[in-house]
Image 1 (cartoon, rainbow, N blue to C red):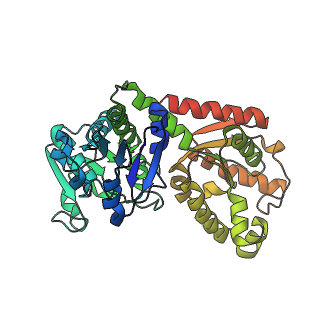
Image 2: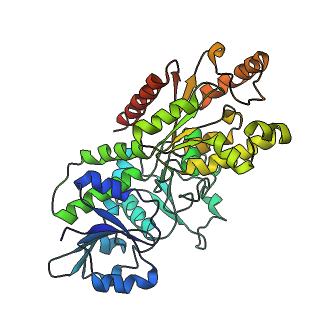
Image 3: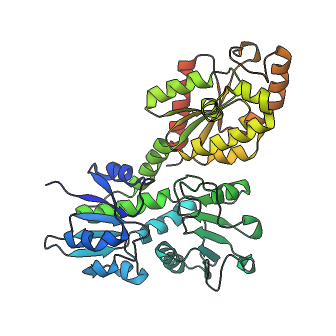
Amino acid sequence: MSARYGLLGEKLGHSFSPQIHRELGGYTYTLMEVRREDLPDFFARRDFDAINVTIPYKETVLPWMDTLSESARKIGSVNTVVRDQEGKLHGYNTDYYGFEQMVYRSGIGVHGRKCLVLGSGGASKTVCTVLKDLGASEIVIISRSGKDNYENISRHADARVIVNATPVGMFPHNGISPVDLDGFPHLEGVLDLIYNPARTALLLAAEARGIPCLNGLYMLAAQAKQASELFRDTVIDEKEIARITAVISEQTANIVLIGMPGCGKTTVGKLLSEHGGRPFLDTDSMIEDRAGCTCGDYLRANGEEAFRKLETEVLKDACKRTGCVISTGGGVVTRKENLGILRQNGVIFHLDRPLEVLSRSGDRPLSDTPEKLMELYKARAPMYAGMRDAVVLNEDAEKTAREIECLLRAHWEENR
């Protein structure tokens, strides 16, 4: 029988762990969704060779362990379990190594700094242990009902580093932040253990303020690397962490296309979908499905403001997904809140095309005359420039699609 590896948890639909372990060793790694009441039977059967454990079971599994590693005992949390030839279970905590590597990767200094840790669960215990070992001057745990909570968090406005160890803002509940960063004027760094979405509302707020920040994907890859070493009694080069983080980032990033009506977003988007095997989403088509009429008819009947509100709601659904090509309507840039929605999982490419060759086909009431089109272009050009990660001149759809693929690959290569 082949080795049986996997991830134990309650709800695992969002996990990137199978892709990471496939990169680490090419072995089969399955998601094992188990209800809390079924855990005794799961561990009685011990029908696995080695597993990772995620929330909410990192502390729950402790009674079934025959031995604990020093870090697992110290933290009181297990995220890796190895079954030996005699059937005994050995519990480890590779999250310690993962978070430690995340801190190093971020470049955020914690030595001598006051750190706020949001959350008091198993992940929080690991974070606090690492921060203490790295020399943080003060570590304050913020919980919903403890002495330091979200109601009195303002008394810790002098914090230099914030670490989110809660699931607040995690898929599918995107767009929610556990704290308002305006209350922390001395902040030097933000770390969020969440990796889906790639940019939580907390990280987007940090980016907007120019505060160094990092999501939890690097931690996930690092802890998986150490877990894989324990699974197979092997040694894996540390450089694999950065490589795998870049690979998974590229695979799961949305390619978002913005630009003027008629610039070729749909055509280029479909080519990108075909080339990369990515799902293609056209937000105008999604709006029409939801509204039950064409975008033009909806605009004429309800006005542009109502249309933009509906567009934002559609974007929220589309951009929660990962690894897609998303073609947006020309006016998506007119609402500031759309930027964070698009950027949470996306790399944004602006398709540019000379005004005189923009397609005039289709029902476009906002740009159905040369005069309207010119006014629209003048108004939106700076908005496209402010929202995009890169601009691509679209003179040939096939060449444009290939250029975007190269730019996306280079984007993640730079982050290795």
